[in-house]
Image 1 (spheres, one colour):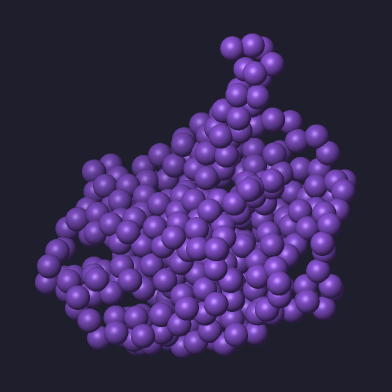
Image 2 (image 1 turned 30 degrees about the horizontal axis):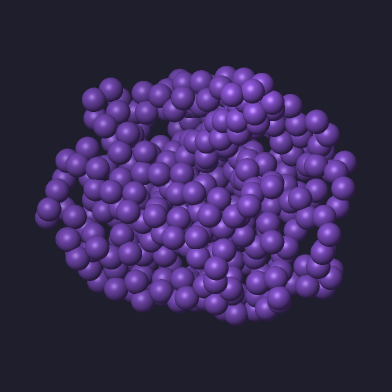
Length: 398
């Protein structure tokens, strides 16, 4: 093979490698955000709490920072560069996780988790636009990226359960810290220099009229907020929900972690399917179909127990995960790359900051009203999502 032919092949291999690391970063991002919720029962015992529900509000800062931090992260991604921001993500996340592992009380862990939330906020407004730039099939790319993120959720359930059982809850934070730092070193080596930041690049042709763009941004902000509320209620509450509904079947923490990992692994493939369909089916029609399924599934799950509930949790997590790719698909279809990180950061700051209330309210709501009430509440939230989706503009680009 000639040198001229070998060079493009090497570039393709390097691109595939750093794109893989961007997908791994998504998995790490969701993995670390759910370690606390998965290990909360063990941490509560260690810190002297009699009920896990009373410790859960201390994680609110992490999810608020995860949302609000998206705004400056998105701005820096567009103006400073996405590559240096991703390096800050990998290294900063790893160091903050080590601080969580060193916490000796509830307020120390709250501060360390909040710092972790700041660094974890970088990924979505920076990593996804970096991955989608020049993507030939954006729907498929989003689907694969979403699958990676949800497999990170499965890791949180499976790996955390095993590490807590055999090595203690602190190890559950140390392991992903080392993984994140290692991935950062690989990303620094493999990702190419960015050159000029996105704000200095030329505008893409075919920009939508401002009125249509404003309507799209308003609709996706509402959908992103309600979807994030459902995501936080489910992913942070599923460990204890599964423990309650499967008591007659299994009680071992590691076994429960394995079942929950199975739920997330199966449901994660919904994002890959939806991502593929996004490239072929009109967005609005597909979004309405996915969201419409959420309402009856939540209502049925509120009354179910045992293996019936297990089937329903797989199904409702499938449609919760399946709704996630639409937001990034709409952004990449309607928003110029020069401002994608800022637009993504703004809507993430609103949706994730509001949805952090789900983490704060989860423990008190379940303690006072039970999981039945929570599942019915989630059905009502899904109805709001459905109403917003109806107002998504129909254009030739959809």
